[in-house]
Amino acid sequence: MKIIYGYILRVFGKFLFIVMVSALTLFIAVDFSEKFDDLMEASVSWLDITKYFACKIPSIIKDVTIPVVAVGTLVAYEVLTHRREILAIHASGISPRRYVKTIILVSLVISIGYLGFIDTVERPLRIQAKTFWSERIKKLSDQALTFKQIKKGEIWYATRHIICHIMYYDPNSKSFHGVSISLVDDDFKIRRKINTAVMTWGGNQWIAENATIIDFEKEGASLKKVASLPIEIQETPADLSIFQTPMEDLSIRDIIHVISLMHREGVNFQSYLMELMLRLANALAIVVSVALAIAILARYSRCSLRSEVKSGVYAIIGFGLFFGLFQLGVGLAASSSVPMFLGVWGGHIAAVAIALLLLSK
View 1: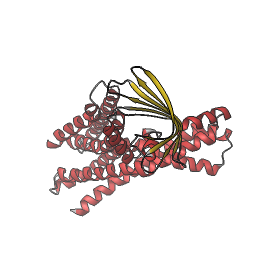
View 2 (view 1 turned 120 degrees about the vertical axis):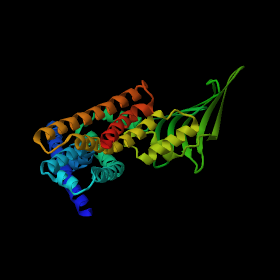
View 3 (view 1 turned 30 degrees about the vertical axis):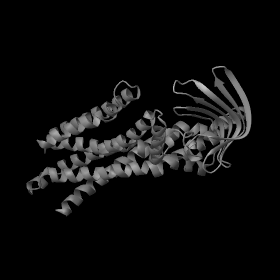
View 4 (view 1 turned 135 degrees about the vertical axis):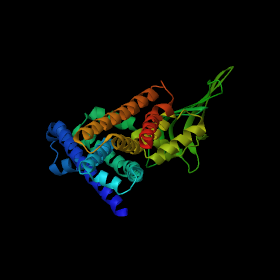
């Protein structure tokens, strides 16, 4: 029994590999042709070009994995059917549900590996490739580059009672420069404003040096200066520096940490929650697409060329509808037209329901 399952998995793995290599070759060739002129104009060595595209390969794998797994599943199943091997498995008394369950479990392992691959391999290499392209290829003028360096550390930070604007963060000294802090009451009226050139991390709290304090009261505003002033910001330098990083460049651990921080401070964290749900949904889309394709093929594929073509067309249409519904739901959820959970997971739920219905027959 294990030999049969091992053989089926080897066949599926073989065609998944073939389809993946074909997709990678195609996408790299297209990307190279589009960027060849820019690379030549920048006088980049072939070694650097090779490193750049090597760093981009994981991103391409991330983008094509879902359709590649679906197409690989379709090709492998149709080949087994055409060779009459599926018929032989059925004739030997093995229920389709048993080997289908095995394939789906393997796709679940692939989806978990896919999630870990994106977090540990694809994300840092994508950042490296993006940095190389922006710094070595798309060179900016000195003025624009200086402005970018100044703006790079800019942070807006807000909680229920604090609004903080920081011009620049120096990670070496763990200090913020050009800080303006507004303290507001429950009615969102400013009760105090603090301006300081430098705010440093004292180990367990933030300290504003040579701060100017403006208190707003009913009778008017009063101004005073202090040499050192503790600031009631609970986040550490590491926490605040996370907000400088685009969401797509954050690890899952960092996203969960940011959601926890923002929830504690009573700040809207829906955008980070959306990013987290999208990563999980993309990983599980591998399992859903395999289950849907297998269910359609097992239901309609027979030992004839006509049925093989028909079942293949049905599987492609089913995957297209699932993926299209998934992308539509994400777009509607991003625009707040539908609830986030329904938008992200609605396509998955519908596809799983259809797959279970077909497999039950």
